[in-house]
Image 1 (tube, rainbow, N blue to C red):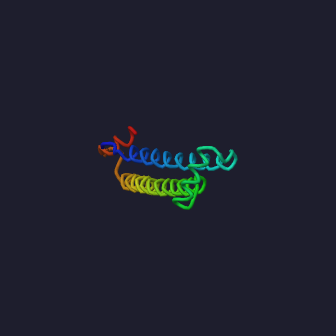
Image 2 (image 1 turned 90 degrees about the vertical axis):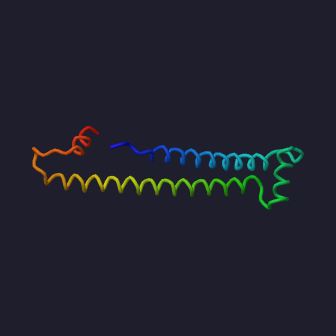
Length: 116
């Protein structure tokens, strides 16, 4: 039985959501810094330009991006957890069906499961 590549996709999705969360956290930090530095700074001017164009500054955009990343991570976590539960239940059902076999009868699946 060949191993599937599900864990690789799961790790890739976690890396993507982590990168987006880091992006949002960077904006939150920049927005916090903007509120405590003098008004003639380039960072404050950039924040003011964002507020004039989009209505929200670094802080609020960072919170929105961070919330989206958290929601995406939760969805990924729940979807992969559902698959793992389904695989676990499938293995339990197989073991219950195999328990009806006599000890002298072994199948290739039992040998593979025993090796795992």
